[in-house]
Image (tube, rainbow, N blue to C red):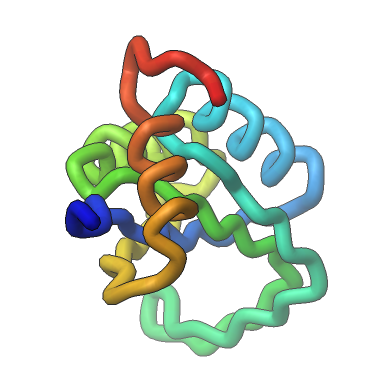
Length: 114
């Protein structure tokens, strides 16, 4: 059995459901991510410009080939309304080999759909 391809999970918070849906659809349509989960109900507490802030946000969890992280991150930053959007990538350390292969294939430009 061949080794599973390198896949990363990319986290990105959004200010509202409309923004989250727009970004998720764009990056899947552009084959920068194979799948994006949209997770509502997030409360963020963070330091911004020397003040502690709080905001209700929507979390995007995008799955992509690790070789696509830079392009996905750049596109999310380009489309995002925040001055400094949260875009954090974590490489998957394992999982279903078949699923990981699908993620890598579906986030590759020009790949045939399964």
